[in-house]
Length: 248
Length: 284
Image (cartoon, rainbow over all chains, first blue to last red):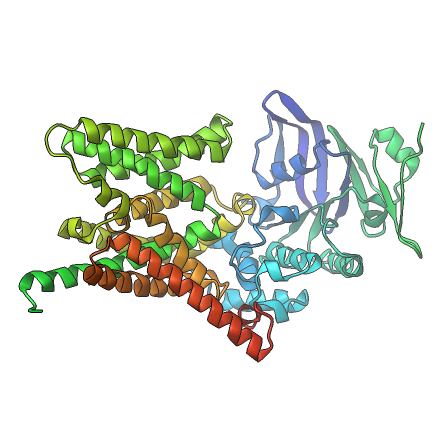
């Protein structure tokens, strides 16, 4: 199995505020890694480093040949980044995932539109292609943004809190879809929902200023304590319930 | 009434003015309405009045002064809100009033001939020169080319800036360039509609268009069409009633908006559809 990218003692900071320190981490083809950790612990910063939106202050990040220009990275931001009232159709949003390959003077070709309709078929969005976001449910919106992330056939898919805004009925479909996508791309998924992700991921990384990689999908209480990763555990049973941390 | 050469010229000028005003306002207006920049655009408009005053005082073309002030205030709001951490709406409010104050001060201290303040505040077709029409024509061509060539880049950046930054390092350049073109559109249309009314020339047509469609490119086309009907009709009424042209244009546009909205509501009631189902049935 080939390595997609590797971080070597990498640190990231916003001004004087160090968010990630001395992180070494390697992602292989076909990995499915859950990234967990407290809010403000640096999960999103990790994604921003990989996307090239911020530069590391120390250490380095090396990509393999496939990822070198970052064109083969698909990205699903937290859903709130786009204006859901904007007059843009589902088809056009999904096509925007091709912009990294097309450049700024772009006309979408017949081929591009065909790619978009394949993705929409795959994600069950075909009936919604002329719709604008304000008419869709949270789960449908999430699928549209997933479509935008995968239309370019990435080798690496970055997901930032994809569980947010997804209705319970759609959640299983969504993770099932990710399992299928994982056959052709590595997935790095940021989530605070340990219970859900441990059922779908292959391994996990706990990010809290530092990064601890754990090569199994079983997340035990001991792991969380050892890594200093206080986290909320959400599980599914006959009745949906949330288990909160024991009071001291 | 006998048609003189003067009247013929007047009609041609008005017609061309209406065409170019509706093209520039339709393209720019769709952008500011979609991106919720209407208040910022109001700030640009009023701040540019400062440039008009200084232009008069210094004896240069007031439109050039207004253009400089308009663009600087657009970029100034961005600077104040992003770099100096001043709330954006406060920054707009400050520049808005400051521009008006500067404009009025310089107009009153200009020796000799005092320009007609009313014609700048409310617009007047009588003061529109051939050069103004030509400038609007050039502006139409520039906007058509700019939006034609960079349509997707502009659309996607304004829809989701965060995502756009992951694939393009040109996001800020596009934002500043587009905002500057919007400022120029506003300034050039001030001669027709006036400082106080010009913003409605940009905002009403897209809102008429959005009754029919929620697809960006179609909103532009419908806006230009609605803008032309409103501008041309307002112009004719202004000509016969002797009322300032800016006011009649805006009045006509609002009446069109109300009529279209009402008709759309009635048609939807009769056909038993949801009032927004028209836009839903569209495919791209």
